[in-house]
Length: 272
Ligand SMILES: NC(=O)c1ccc[n+]([C@@H]2O[C@H](COP(=O)([O-])OP(=O)(O)OC[C@H]3O[C@@H](n4cnc5c(N)ncnc54)[C@H](OP(=O)(O)O)[C@@H]3O)[C@@H](O)[C@H]2O)c1
Image (cartoon, rainbow, N blue to C red):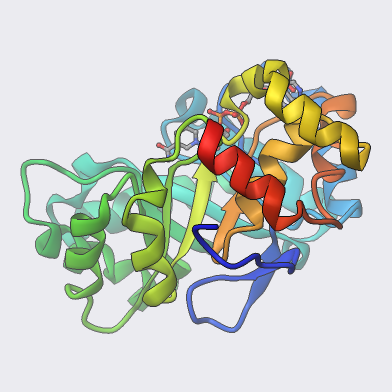
């Protein structure tokens, strides 16, 4: 097996000492915000406490939605992550301006975690990270992190901070998309960086995987639940699927509270 099994459904963010649910919810491509609100409230009432959004999702409407959710359930019950468009990273003034706009959309004073959505290819990693750090100084976020940074980029980001630490790298990771297992995850574990796995159920396509269905039948679990459990069984990995469907949410919730056995994780590692 590539990594020891992490049995906890509460995962530490970086080395902040703060734990959040091993599964959070994404907000990309929400079709009906009213339905989604009901589903997200149910999720919070049933143990999910972290949500992910970004300024570019639905031109700011996803951030507005997360703000609405926070007002419904109570700000202190949510760990909110949002992401800045890399074009704002050119100077500190623009970083702050973009974040204040995002916070105004959400109706919040601060978020818990702000990520660079992807590296700005026209700037050095160190310059963008240094500009980004200002958000912690200004009290607009509690923590910072990155997204879509590969191992080398993450390493550079970690060594570029002056005061704040990079606590998260949000990357694509699923049973069908396992790149993080070839270097990045091992590096993240060693450096106490949490990986948020996006597109963790491949837009629902993992439901059709015969192997996951066979494995799941031994536990009374569905392929979606096996696919998510595989991810959260990794140290430092949080999965952030998106759903606005109550049945899908219940299925997602059933991915926590148990673990695949090592031999089944190995079968997935070797055959997918
Ligand atoms: N950092 C980045 O660059 C980046 C990139 C992509 C995504 N993300 C984040 O990660 C989140 C998740 O990724 P994603 O939305 O790309 O993909 P995903 O979570 O793998 O798939 C979401 C899709 O799967 C469906 N679904 C959810 N639960 C299901 C279930 N139990 N059975 C069958 N289908 C189900 C959803 O439809 P229903 O809503 O109808 O359930 C939705 O269409 C995003 O929302 C976003 O917050 C970040």
